[in-house]
Image 1: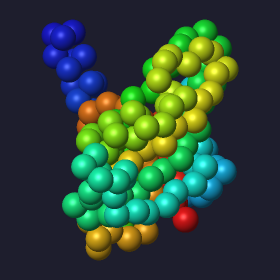
Image 2: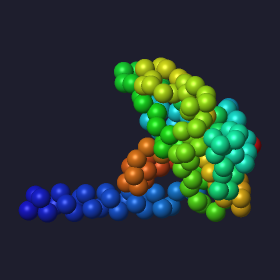
Image 3: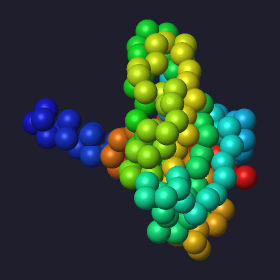
Length: 171
């Protein structure tokens, strides 16, 4: 009987959380260059961005299927006790159609071989680093914004409930 009551309570809490998530405004915070978005103790500040058709020259050139968007960000660990290891997959671009774009792996690999990456190791508590991320977006992608996402859909929903839908609009 206790297990059944516990299951009913958990289902009710899940339903309330899902309703809360669905009824939230599409974006609770929108910032721009110099602003920070965060999940828990970890943040990302947009430093700038630009577009280009490809990276490099000659046979090592990496071309975009659409257009490359290079985004400069500062990653911050506001925690007091734990290290934070940044992964490229934590930041995604979202366009006006709601499509999410992940870092372009081949272009990012090229960029890392030609430029030092300041976020290549774990950040200690209070630490920060800067990095540049490359996204290959369709030519029709407009109104791009940066979104911080750590895990799958369940964690994404919990983060949204706790911290709101946060975006940094690219210039």
